[in-house]
Image 1 (tube, helix red, strand yellow):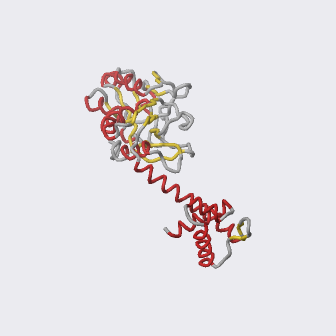
Image 2 (image 1 turned 60 degrees about the vertical axis):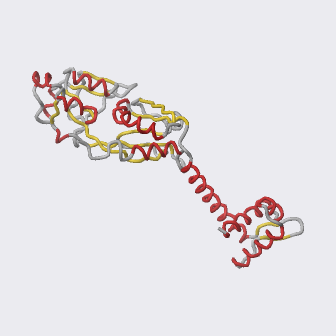
Length: 296
């Protein structure tokens, strides 16, 4: 700690070009400041300052130390800020962006999170469009698939599977597909990306969109895909956690499960040196709690 104090004195003297000014800034006497700088020079074995009756200026060796010392000071200040932030109670509005179906993952856990951090205001932005987090003033987002935005930091949340399923009534009329080729003969319920005509490819374990062709029914919301499947409009592919209730009750039948690929959900937030306490609290809360194990 004594070395840090001497380094602070050296930086102040270099910036003020005055031992007296540096001493005043740090609450020292000019004599004590001068002696401390002299001891630093003796320990390093170099002259750091050119001294005149009016001012002091850095030598070449002093300039070298000045650049290094500024980096050390900045790192120290960042460490202090990080520790202060860690102690601060999360408060204010926390804006969370997530896919429209993300509420099925997150909402059941929100009462526990809210009870831990009562000073937080939760604001959910549920949309399947990808947004620029800083521009949209989003604190943290839940996203799936491959992450493309290198300006953000991320942490793995958990895995899920895409399952093929249909209502028992549809299967009774049309039969259950026995292989990927059979899918081409079935009515297909597809997710359409909002604001475009692009249908999301079916992910089929290395044979993406093996079913090909048009959609008998399309929706820009995965909840709409689920509703259409439950109504018997055709075969749909959806995340296992979305289909789970229907599969458990018998309202949906799954097939070709060997071709159900695994996908990943991520927590994503703007790339800062350290996230705000409210963001850190949310990340720590979610990891290990939402999708904690292997996909079902």
